Figure 1 (cartoon, rainbow, N blue to C red):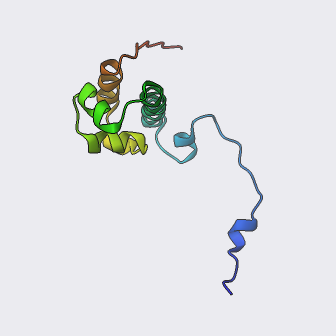
Figure 2 (figure 1 turned 60 degrees about the vertical axis):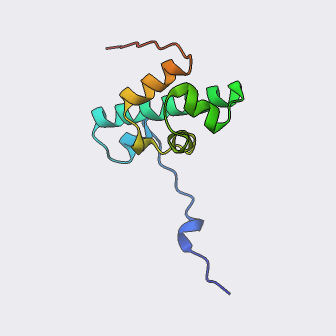
Figure 3 (figure 1 turned 120 degrees about the vertical axis):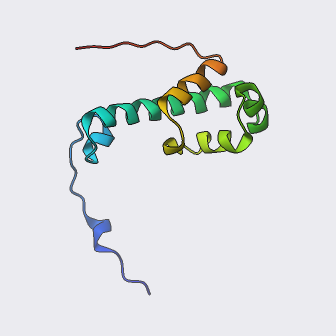
Length: 102
């Protein structure tokens, strides 16, 4: 029988600052861009599912390959720049808004 990993019994919790990428130690500026990328990917996945498009249909409409859509739906954020994600969102019919706060 496999011995249980004692780390699985660790019940300590660490409060988040609200951005998991900062919590993981990324530079705050880079972490914010990563957070935005993740948010756009989540919205894109929700939108594509709501449209009922297959990956092939989505690829044609967004003018990318089906494997690229697959990576998007799998959340492989490191494969997408924020610029590319925003381009895909517009192609998908989403409206963009940018709001900056001090």
